[in-house]
Length: 211
Length: 211
Image (cartoon, rainbow over all chains, first blue to last red; front, side):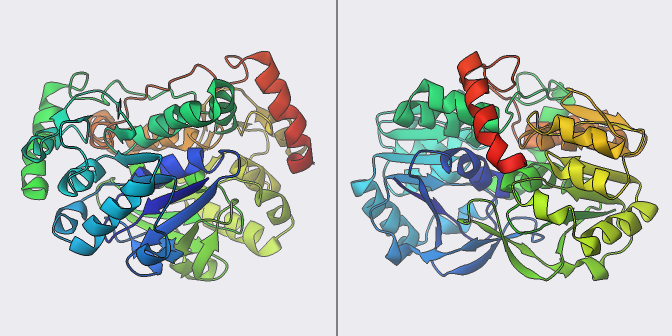
């Protein structure tokens, strides 16, 4: 089972590594990090780079496509090389997936028309112009399209997908191997739970990022 | 605030990226990935590499040290270059931290003597010969030493540490920004919660890894 995780300049690391760390434990998984060019691809902070081992052209028919999000997603919305690749890979894939604002790239490629989908809570409204129906759920499955909410939601998505591909017990095994028994020290992980002034503060800052 | 995240051959990606994705959002954070040599360092699966931008020698007094775990931890237990660096860095650090079996490296460096600490649930007993007192908690703080349980626990550790360094509201902001509102599709993230046959299965497989 070939899993292609797409990298591009200024993606968010955990968006890619959450699904990677779960999906790489599928039976017979071949996990490939792909980008327009091979070599190191810098994350949004600039202080970390993940290596793309294959070019997009080299991986045309993965079984699973994973598209992370991050501040670098905006300029990719007009990158025809990437959008064309997403359409080609999607034509062959069993599952086409995204984390965070990666769903906006799937949407821009025309893959989420008429589909329920999610994204980072700050970006949900941006799905609608592409004909997708945004939901506030953490992991949304509509046909073969699985989209996850912001950044850390890719771990929940990875486990959900493993359950569908390899069965519940294999997913439970991966959850136990990665000791995913979350105990956040605060209750602030969604705009419905976080204090109002924190939601408002992030919303104000995000205007500079998302528009 | 300088944060040094240590990489070595066959570390587990999420062990490093969980703390990175949270701690990099500290005010004035300078996050550095360090290793014996600069350049790509392969994870345990071989299918991903993270770039080390600095050598250990170049970063001698970080404010925060983060040591990930993974199958590659075992050979590092006798790597005097790394253990010496851990002792030197620890002499200057405000916080010395680990995720998963990274705590065994802190222990091997002599830093956890008489301290309460944690590790991956499969490796907890390996702390004791080094004079550390293993606990089954997810994040353990003893003085300036903060150890986290397996793989995904580094996210909870990162948020805990941000709360201590920059205050609860900053930690809540980071939790909301990374949408850390975990909703695992299964209840199997700890040996107390997972079905018995899955715990036994992983325990049997781990004999080959941990001994």
